[in-house]
Picture 1 (tube, helix red, strand yellow):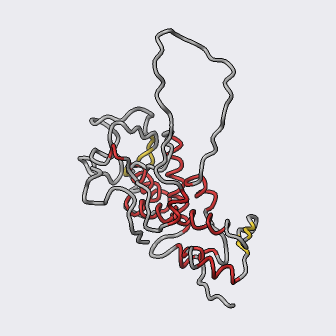
Picture 2: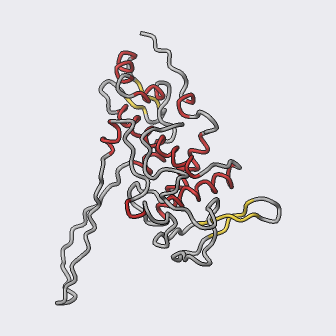
Picture 3: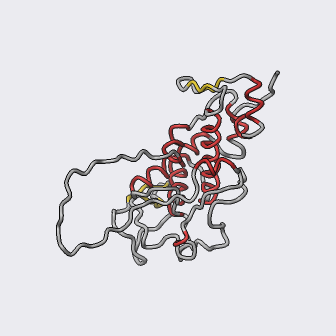
Length: 255
């Protein structure tokens, strides 16, 4: 059996997308999540706005935040497709060379249920490490508590820290039309740049030489008046319910 499979870049980099844009996007979102102690996959809109400014500053490429939001969906689908591929019987992922080995009969069988798997026929996922940090499951440490310290008789009930995940990664992989929500329900009708969100990162201003200059935010809760500007944001702020872009993961991805 001879399989005529196009090279990987034809699947990943249509239009103006390039590997360095994917790398910058993932690095920015991962960094912002770490800086703001954000867990889970609900990504605030300001993160995408800052990521767009990072890309413009580092690569000289202007992109709208919603284009990055769409791209992140596709990157998640790549991660899920590759993870499903290497779990298939008859496949072997050689990590050092980043190639997946399988017979053409096995590949043909996989292609029927994993359409994006053909992108990995010649080489593995180029951004697997970044995608694993962004979308992979987090390890949970269990610490044994030997002593219980009672501070007061006036006990205050502890707030639950249980994390509720609406859909697992396996459920996401089953249907290409199934998308994770981008904004949580609490922010859908409110301002995406709510003062409840503290963005401890940076912004940009136009320098005297006509180029963007990076400036740092101070790690303080942002206020409605006198707060540093966020690039590409409208003067009056932006509502999640705006007609500029729908809220939540789209049901159909357009690369």
